[in-house]
Image 1: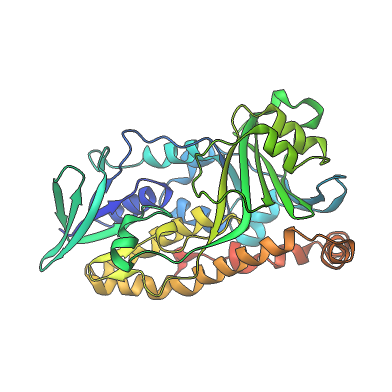
Image 2: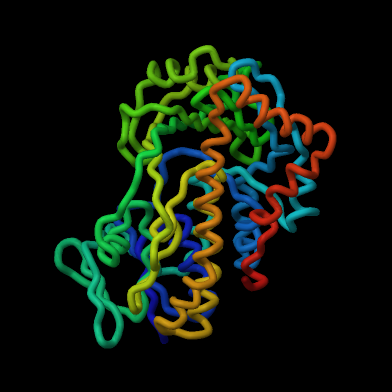
Length: 393
């Protein structure tokens, strides 16, 4: 039986382990942490990823921990003035073939991990490097021990050791944007609690996103992005100063300032942009998720692309359990993920219009479409949300 070694027990790594196991492949999932725990934050699961979860029989476990937003809306950040408010809950299934969810990242990991086969997950397994063998692959662990297999999947995130071993030091660019994020109990926010929507708030050189988490909408998720150059550390778990966040969003709508004021912890990270990689494979080694195509968060598709990757890779390995299967996966995924990377980058520019003429030129047509032809807003997302990798590329 072909033995698959997967490095990284995040959303992509766990989904990949489940998908490969369901196709009869032997799987070992290596995770450097001593326990599966995630920094508290929200994540959006769009219909294109939900279709994969449904095919893998994971959807029920995920859905019972998740919230379904009633609509997608956009507002001006300072005044709260609506730009558009487009129905989502029912339209997502009728138009794109699956629901749209918001979920706490820790709950997402919990739901996926509950479906891992016994004995697959190996915690406290930190990777140092890998070596290609005539008969497969050897993964070197911290402390000098090693594990051998036939195929190695690098699902170890934006700072991937597997990618660096394969391609050398990466070329990355600081975007000039820093992101804040927090999760706040809804009962702390009173009249300033965000609505049960996926809401983007636009402003001069900054924007925010708010939405609810939990099946009972008991938590509010906040992400705020501001243009600044004095912080360039990438990583989701760095704690920031609340006073700095309040200064970044001074004068904004009370929904935003209340979320910042009531947050027990505010994390911040520098947003780093990267061009698509020239290749994701090296013989029996392949990259998946953020290790293969790290992307900016402005389409909320990082985890969704990893879930799509997991399905396609397992499908190709089930057909050809060799490097040719890895190359087929790469060929099917490169163009789509590059398109999502580019669209995420474009949204960064859309959200931060600084002058009144720029705002009118950009948000005016959005306002008009939202009132006269709301389906236009839906149509713009058809290529992304309507895609279904379980039906073939």
